[in-house]
Image (cartoon, rainbow, N blue to C red; front, side, top):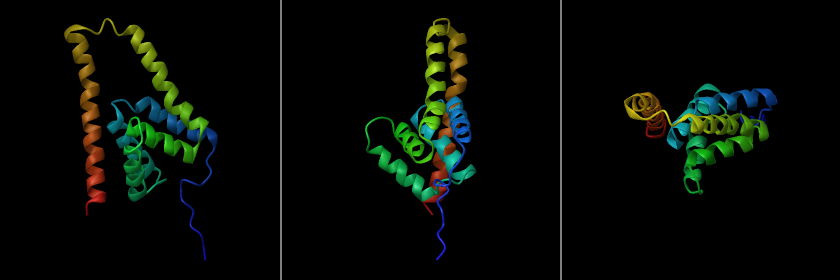
Length: 141
């Protein structure tokens, strides 16, 4: 009997893992629901590391754990996939960017600041809608 390997267990080079999670870390802004949408797109649609059922099970399980579900989902995938390289790629960019933003945020008051911050909010809504629609289509036949 031939064994089939889960795509998540196939070894990948550490730099590939770091680069993927760095890309996600730089692009994943907008909160936990947006992160879950990005993760679904990357790990199910593009890379096929998980199927819809496994991913929805993982998200459902992570809803019960303390903290934001996206952090738990990301951490679970990190544990299954690449450990420290994935963590460094995903967490460090956000931490550095938020620290730099905090030092420079004071001029973002008034109409210009409000307008500048409105674009990322609209983008987050579109990403959430896309993720929800994808999950509805695959999980509610």
